[in-house]
Amino acid sequence: MATSTLFPAEIEAWRTQIDDALDRYTLFDQDCPARLGEAIRYCLLAPGKRFRPLLLLTANEMCGGTLQSAMPAACAVEMIHNYSLIHDDLPAMDDDDVRRGRATCHIQFDEATAILAGDALIPLAFEVMTRDIRPQELAALCVSALARASGPSQLVGGQADDLGFQFSQADLETLEHIHRRKTGALIAVSLEMGALIAGAGPEKLKSLTKYGKHLGLAFQIVDDLLDLRGSQAKMGKRAGKDAELGKLTYPAVLGEEKSELRAREVAQAAIDALKPFGESARPLELLARFVIDRTQ
Ligand code: GRG
Image 1 (cartoon, helix red, strand yellow):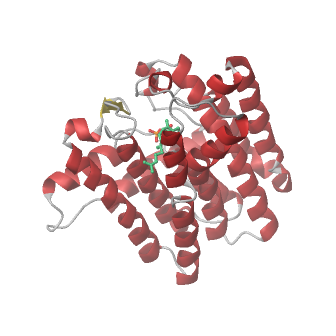
Image 2: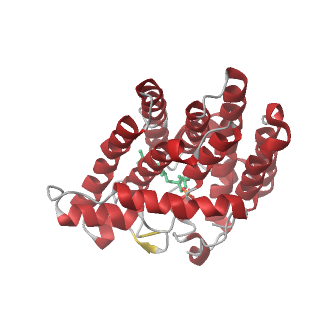
């Protein structure tokens, strides 16, 4: 999976810093069994796009924050995202054997290790935030926002419904309700935490959260289209899995052409939500365009 130059240069430079911080956060002590630590690092440090941490850092910078103050939350959201990928790939869920161009965790290690590696990333994310975000009141706000976004009514609930609707029919509203939680919640909370850490006022916070919600949906629509049309070599994961698993997807509900139109419409709504930022919203505009044009 080639991820070397995905984003505009100024954003791209942060990816290395995110990778370095994730590396430092997973240098475990002697009490962490070697195989578990190895599995966590194998998945977390694999070449992902780092899209959620990049959104967080970009929103933070737009609101006047510093990279150093936002990095713990950026790493935390990537940890939660990675746990969800590891568990999603398990035989009990999507049963995938390739992720980020490599064997999935349970294939490379074993199922129990993959479950535990995913499990471990959840408390690690919250440990990092409570320890490294200052002041403590801000850490508490971020913990609360990320816990909600990854909890039973958002990420986990969206995943449960996604599994529950396999091989069934549903309308657009149901489909969007699933996608907004399964994929959108972590994307939206990344923007929200970036703004919170920079001390953004209510207008900017609202605008970024709205952008995040629209962008999350656009991201998932494109993901559905890539699964239909994309190649494993580019995406680093198997294509065509959605149809195989009878997943409720945009192309299944709307058809390919209308799905593409809907993705563009939602990405434009995301960009429109950035009006209060004026010219300084340019990096997030570029990220919204990346979502629409991405091939991995
Ligand atoms: C197990 C609670 C739980 C949730 C799983 C991750 C997930 C939710 C589902 C995966 C199915 C899927 C393809 C969702 C589409 C959106 C998504 C999360 C894509 C993967 O994220 P990327 O493209 O991946 O940002 P990288 O590897 O670049 O980080």
